[in-house]
Image (cartoon, rainbow, N blue to C red; front, side):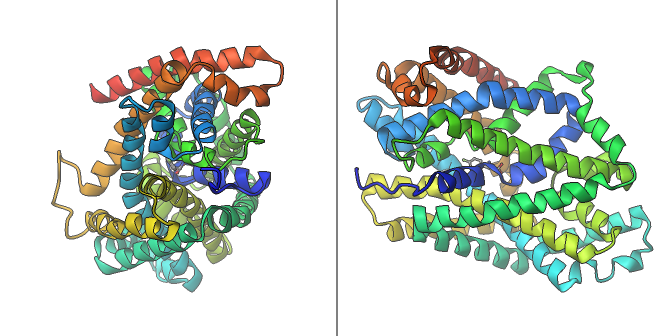
Length: 457
Ligand code: PFF
């Protein structure tokens, strides 16, 4: 396996990994979670979850990948050939496939909204709604419903997204994933900074910021902790072998601790910057709580905000570019989990592996897209196909994967394996290693188990 693909530079490696982590989870899900989980109290718990649990778990995934040079399933087979631990990787491959089928649909909507922002169609008749917030809200609600419930436009956009993913993934690790991320990630940060500066100039920016940054400790409840942990894992791309796969593209010289800290900090920074953008807007434009939930935030509330700002079209184009960049780089990393698996396990060429993985995806994504339209009445356990895949993967499969990865790395990997992978990056300071190992062995499994049980009960 010595001819395994590798990231070619440190910058490319960090850009690709941050590209995986920064996605719809940061830009869309995070502000909505803050709003529904008590504001700054959630932010505080989220930051603790990233620092105390996220970084050690990321180190475990990086170690499994870099140490074995194998895909998500192969890593377990290399380290524990006779056991059934490879099923942990298989669960990750399955989860990645399920996530990709709805992630590409939302990325497709983003593409459409970007296009409509460029042509001006998105705001074409919003003035006719009288300019009052509630009328405007209704207008964008209606627009979104009209769009997602039709058959062809969302489907075509989803297929374009899958097409872009195929092109990048076929181009390979260096020429596809790394090159794309190295160009797009700086663009994403520039757009975010521009938005933050604008948001800070809103009339009631101060009120928004104090809501986001002043914690009310009485709001920290068990459910806030459960949600913050789930958000941290999803946002850091943990629990489904994505970072095992990327870890296998790290050269031996990569310092894992430094990389994990850099990636986690940048991912957290993007989430915090989104809060710095959204909450001043919420207070300054008098938006209600309900407008921040789920799909509404990105496809209804923000267009409503942009329509009240000067240079509406420009802000809208910038925002949907940001969202598209974030969604694309994450979608590609999710697809890479299955492609690396098919390539490594079945000895297929990259081109062939990409086709094997992506062709059935067209069918699954079609089902997800249609679950807002003609298939909206088709429900399993009361959920549409889209919601079912979202709930099953985020609430059950990712935490289960994270739990198994911790237990395997902490208890069942060959003795000294984890330490050997981490040692070069920790220098002589053994205390950090002990702390990371203690978290991976004890604290993370117990907490994840509690999260899992609480979402089952
Ligand atoms: N981290 C991505 C986001 O925040 O949107 C989503 C994701 C990517 C989850 C890759 C899991 C994964 F393996």
